[in-house]
Length: 169
Image (tube, rainbow, N blue to C red; front, side):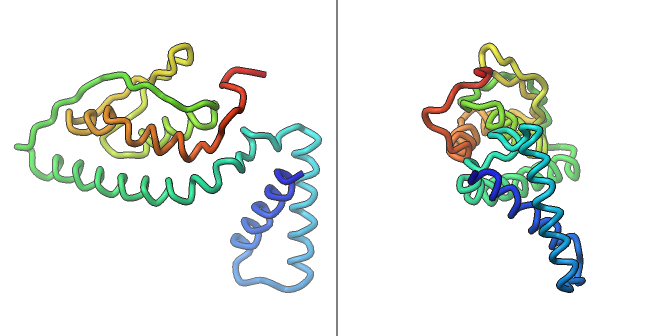
């Protein structure tokens, strides 16, 4: 029930944000009705689950997303420095990192976080061993990921404990 209420609130906030400066009573009422209707459809289709609306990650995301934004800014500066100064060494490397996430949503969040950071791309995911194959433009970018800081933060953001592991029904 909490997941459905949360989904409805998120949908209504999104509707409000996209409606611009038109906040007449009839439009707000239509937004509420639309949000309730979409939640009902999501419930009927079994889409309001841990994967479709991962509310367990909400609190963790409040600290993870600003940290990730800062990491993206730092990586942008590093990549810009490489591009603007060709004398800086470019040492592309392909390597594997272990993913400690428990759920598929957590693994996707971690893999996307790696790819969002300029200079690194998640190339492959091995579900059996929970390893990602990563391409990094420099050895320093690879070393940063190999420290496991992003992995640990993604695990904290995942916010699950005692839940079924990925792949479990």
